[in-house]
Image 1 (tube, rainbow, N blue to C red):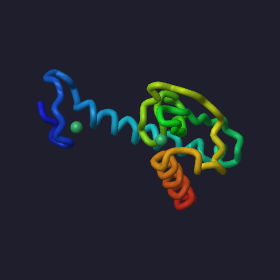
Image 2 (cartoon, protein in one colour; image 1 turned 180 degrees about the vertical axis):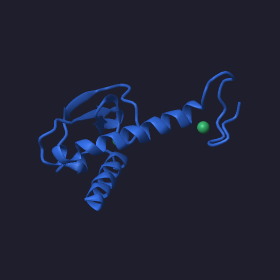
Image 3 (spheres, rainbow, N blue to C red; image 1 turned 45 degrees about the vertical axis):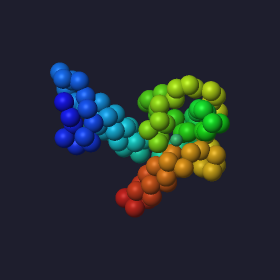
Length: 110
Ligand SMILES: [Zn+2]
Ligand SMILES: [Zn+2]
C-alpha cells in the first residue's frame, strides 16, 4: 500500500503508515511536554539530554526517554547528562527549535 499522505510504501494489513504514525505520535509527545515547561524553565524539573552518534546531543522527551524533541530515536545511546534550558546551544538545532517554539507558544497563551 502507498500512504496517501507521505507517499511511502507500507505493508498490507498495517493499520496506518508507520512514517505518519511516528510523526503523529511525536507531535502528541511534544504537545505533552507543554505542561512541564514551567518547572523545566524554572530549573525544577529534571530533564535529560542524550548523546548519539557524531557527538550530537538531544533533549529527551518526558514520558518517552527513547526519543528526542527533534523526533530522533536514541539508537545508539552514547551518553546522558542533565539538560539545562539555559544551554540550548549544546543540543541539536531541531531539538532547540522545537523547545523554543513550545516556549514561545506557552508565552503566547499566557
Ligand atoms: Zn505516511
Ligand atoms: Zn535533536
